Image 1: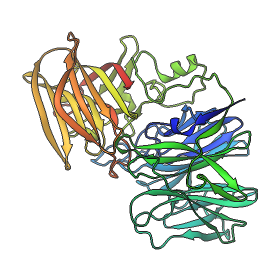
Image 2 (image 1 turned 90 degrees about the vertical axis):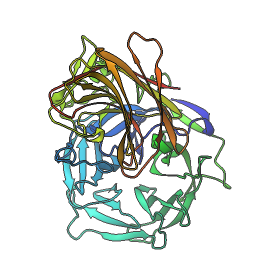
Image 3 (image 1 turned 120 degrees about the horizontal axis):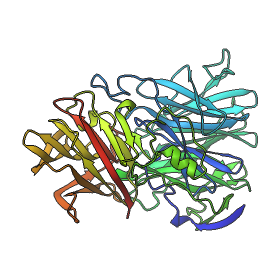
Image 4 (image 1 turned 45 degrees about the vertical axis):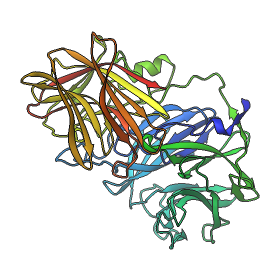
Amino acid sequence: MIREKVSLGTINPVIPTDYPDPDVIRVGDTYYLASTTMHFFPGCEILKSHDLLHWEHASYVYDRLDDTPGQCLKNDENIYGKGMWAPCLRFHNGSYYLSFCANDTHKTYLYKASSIYGPWKKQYIEGFYHDASILFDDDRVFIAYGNREIKLVELDNDLKGPKKGGLQRTLVKEENNNVLAYEGCHFYKINDKYYLFLIHSLPDRWMRTQNYFVSSSLEGEFHGGEIFCDDMGYFGQGVAQGGIVDTPDGHWFTMLFQDRGGVGRTPFLLPLRWKGAVPFIEENGKLPAEIEICNSIPDYEYMSLTGSDDFSEGSKASDKADGRKTESSEFDSFGMRSFWQFNHQPEISLVKQDVKKKRLLIKTDRLCDKFDKAINTLTQRMTLPRSRASVIVNVEGLKIGDRAGLGVLCEEYCYLAIEKTEKGNELLLISKENGEEVEKLRETLGNEKAYSLRIDANTFALVGNATIFWKRLPEKEFKPVPFSKSLQFTLAHFVGCRFALFMFSTKESGGTAEFSDFKYEIY
């Protein structure tokens, strides 16, 4: 066990990409973090760390949820901006528990596993519990949840619903804030006192702040208030909402998040200290200059949360080579690396890795007229402050009307595609603007077998931008496309912008696009 002091200014955000609503626990000397993944599949990613500073993928809780038309992008339905969010992760009596609600099904889900790597067993908790947090209290179990009015419900021993005759009450409520009232529950029992950690906004303008409430009993009155109101120097965007955790040597931390424009919502690690029973983050209006970190495995090499892929082997082979544990997944036959997620629940039979040729193949089985309706779109998060994605697209297997390429997936998306037409291949750039698709470029290319496409994303500011490039394979230099796309966070998708590999058919299904040499750079 190594203790080291780290400058607080050098580590935030501790994960420079989109991992919102973090809940964090410690089991022994290992930390686990669960985050919202919304409409992406596989879903509910859990990360692990040995020092709270560096994180890698541990597992996904589910491959599929309820197979609804919206989750599967069927019948012109989708779950953008919905799906799972605000998970609660707990470890109790040798088992891991993960709960969340889904805003498309209006259900509350509970998954249980004996290992963080799964397999995870699914059940439902009767009721819909917004931003809920579970508390195991001796032989009783409770769930705190809500927006504006934070409620408490005692659950039955099987965690399937409210306990008959069990405790139900309102813990705190906020009636006069019309910007954002209390929500984002994180509920704990520490030294025989009960703590609620919540967010809300300043009442006169949008800015997240972190709040706490404490009571000596579940029946008693909860007292507290604001404990952190700081934008950390970033455009008035407050840092708030997340779990708290202690270290093996008795220090406490909180993992909160901040809206960071087009890249999404990024976790921040901040010290949590105590004056008696009162938690605080700042002292005299200031954060400490440095914090002390307890590192249980100092030489551990963490796998990246984003990355390049030559499609020569899947995540299972890569993880096993590194000595990582792996969870069983129905995606094993595809062999997807852990940093990839599909835009919605995929039809995995249409996706294949040809490891000998080092190619990813995406085939179509239906017609589609828009980028955000295409199934099997494979995505990766963008990273602060700038990230770049490039890929080679082989179009030999495309049918007339097929479009395949590289895009930016968000509400106001854009994509660069090679479209197979009667005249040959055409380079096509589409940008969604004010809710409508606009054709920004169409250029006749010829009949080459493959092309290389690239997107550079600058995501530091609240509104970032993406620039787009392409080239024929024999060419050494990429050609810039005279176009710049704004990158921003919107509530319609409720996630950061992502790089996306896609293929869809507009006239005849059955075509296949092949992707190779995907490169991801942070610069």
